[in-house]
Image (cartoon, rainbow, N blue to C red; front, side, top):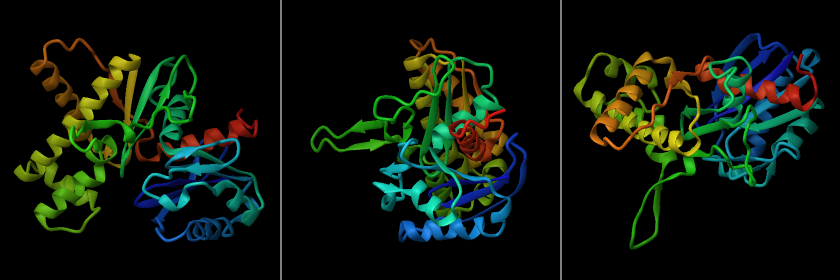
Length: 297
């Protein structure tokens, strides 16, 4: 059995999983924002609940990840992880093998292993969460890039102020949490409450629907851009909100609206929902761990 973590900007999801991808149990806790030691301690507490049964720990984490050393660079919204060897710290505390992989790349690996892009040689995976994660499969292989940053969609620039040279980025404009919290502010409910936000969206509330449609258009914008850059056979959408059927529908409608308004567009992206939806990062982290320790059957 393996203990698998998916570190997000809002929650840390965890699961106990078998080597063939069966999820035995899962849960989550709020992401600590104070020190990396707080994060490691919370993760270790879960390990010691069943330490005698756990063969290894697999971690999906935001940021640029050196999968060989375990060092995290620019840990997304978790700035305290920059230059921190999370894998080493967790391994020293728990005394079992620990692997770590970028969250977007984990999702791509999951879908390529057992999910919606399995069997495709070229694919892209978008993860809609606190930021805009992603992963690229090119020529039947996860593409990491020279500086390990391939698929970091959050860092793509929306536009640049010509006077200040400051740019807005896709990780902010494409943030599902930002979209949810805009609706929460308008409709006056608690922040980060996606279930309530989508209740308003699915009920056709005018304000919520407007915010949601604008969000879908931003994602459609990036999907079309990626389609032109690598021309993948398929693009999968994951993250917590992907469990809502209206998300895939809204994005596909936005793609068609952009194409109709801009007739030079010839791209025909094939967009689907991730098979593992909001659990994709967990499955991909496990697959990476099994590969790194030569345990894939």
